Length: 308
Length: 174
Image (cartoon, rainbow over all chains, first blue to last red):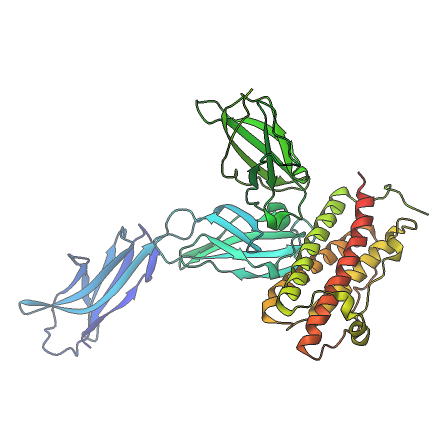
């Protein structure tokens, strides 16, 4: 081995920081004259270093790059040998940033998968391989103290969300949850969220039907509509309130809102509408009076009011 | 003395309990429906004799009756009963692959409700110094016994929950 890069101020440095490297050429390297010139090549650009001889005849060249502006580059050490340039060694330079503090951490309890899914914003790119870990614990107070531990949740590569399985959760106790980000240049921790899984249930929209006239259901009055709905099945055990919005299909009328509607009634006669007019209706529900989130609006239901 | 709705239980605790009862009832119904669909075990009344031989215990709620409601005793019986059902559901482990996830979810929800009750007892200062320890559980020695045990445990649990719901509804007021 004739020569090699022996020191580097770090295989990975902070983007924009200076980097120093040394390359030595052994005096035992045959066919090489005592004053052979050592050159450096960063990417495609050759640069000279400061070269000096060591007492044992070894040649050493040192180079300092003021600030590395690429997140990845190749730095090679060359030796001028006759008319040619011989490459002796090559180092991969990586540069980036320590992880920013993850932010906008939010969690929703999914009643279909029974998982608590949390998502966050990772912050600007670090240009480096950065691992995110969702950490959490069960608490019987306001997340000041840990009652039970929960295994770390490791998101899939490149994903900024992770799901904590039901078996690690207590749906009616506080969960302290936060995100840790780590790469070779450092670690950062998001603010902690303290939540009760059953309070952050995201409901799917209810199902809305029109009530067709039948022996049990008298036809609606002119300007009225009869409709029925059912809450999303996995959430039937929750007390909920719902709201209905409607507007004529034609024209630019804004939505009119009917609220609150209790799901246990299961049917509603909507009056005060224009007779023989096609209406678009949507409904959404939320857990109530206990805390929860509104579902999305249901798919539209088109109904036409009776003639006068 | 009969304790009317006047009591020191937080309304949010009672609303959560009612919700948890409904959730566990839904889980229990799911288990009963699957046992019926998959193994044709649809009538717990046909399994009374087997239930006796298996020694499947039931949980008393005598302190929760509306005529003689004794709040501390009632909370204690609710907790002990739920704790018992946690053990019974754990004893059903390996019931069958089709039912495993249903039993697991039921067990987790019962455990959550047990925790909620215990925490409230601690907050009221009426929790025993030590958490209860599980008594001996029935030993199900065959797949059939485990399934039949599942029907009986689910049925007993539903009755227990109905009584619990009535007292919680009474305490939560109109």
